[in-house]
Length: 168
Image (cartoon, rainbow, N blue to C red; front, top):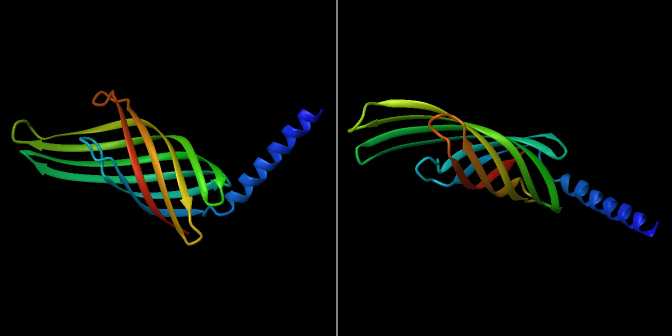
C-alpha cells in the first residue's frame, strides 16, 4: 500500500510541475531558425509555432537558398510542418518531440547539363530543447532527421537548428 501511495504522490508532483511550467508557453511564436547548410540544407529558415493545446503545438518552417558557384546555379525552397508534444523540465525550460513532413522544390542549371527541377517529399521528426524567457523571447536547439521518400531522395538527412523566436 505504501508503494502505491508513493507512486501516486510522485505522479501528482510531476504532473503539478509540468502543469505549472506549461503556463509560460505562448500561443504563438515567430522567428528564425539557423540550420545545417550542407549540399541539400538551407541554412536559414523562417519559423512559426502555434499552440493547439496546453502541451501540443504545430511548427511551420519555410527556407530558401540560392547559389551560383562553379558553373552550377540552383534555387532550393523547402516547407516543413511538424507536430510537437511539449514537456516541461523546469520553469521556462522544455523539451519537445514529434513527427512531420517536408516538401522541397529544387531548380538547377549547370554549364554541363540541361536545366531541371524536382519536387521531393521527406518524412521528418524532431527532438529539441527550448528556453522561454520571462520577456517574449524563446531560444531552442533541435535535431531533425528527414528521410526522403521520392525517387530523387531515398536517403536519411539529419538537420540541426538553433532558433530565436518572438512569443506573442
